[in-house]
Picture 1 (tube, rainbow, N blue to C red):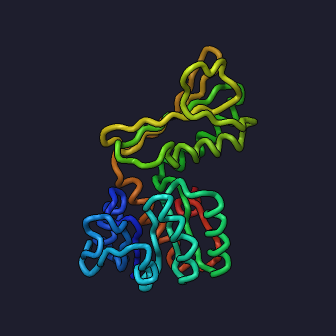
Picture 2: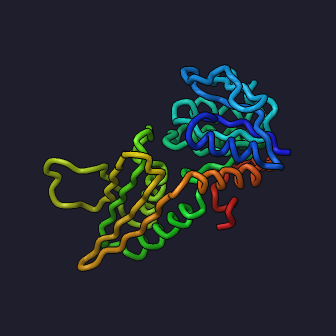
Length: 259
């Protein structure tokens, strides 16, 4: 039985993952962490599981084999560098965490001989989408690249981690070093850059489009998320895959999904 603790247990994604864990025969929820201002703080969020805060992190993960973080960049930054010293593996789905914190987390995982999975998106299709972005960008180096992402009106960060992962991968395979976030006023002629645009509205789960615009033709690569179930399945498979590993490494979803 895989014991799981989850940060962000009452968020939209957190609830979906927790519900699947509760129904799974090979895992159970043993810890939940949420923000102190939430209504369910200090109360039973799932049978036998009391919602606690960051100050009680040790108590949240003390019986866990795997800690899953689906919170926000601020709280996640305070947690993911501490969990490895507690001997617990991690699956990290929170985006917007600084590179310094990520490097500190990698150092702690290595030092404590735990293991982790880190990805900006846990859907199988999105990981294939990223790969296709790399292939097209490397093949169409004279084309202008624009990225458009759309999410629900409650999403806190922008642009999305999924969009920025696509940008990062395309920058690696091209000679483009500049990113422009939206445009207004008189920006002038387009430079050698990748444009990124964020849309927020309604209950959009997650849409991502990359436009490759050349002379006389346009290629659009699109991924649309119909429900959070696709993301949740990736989290569940990552929990199973990382369980028991103690190799001191931080993995991406390519290893989990065999991509």
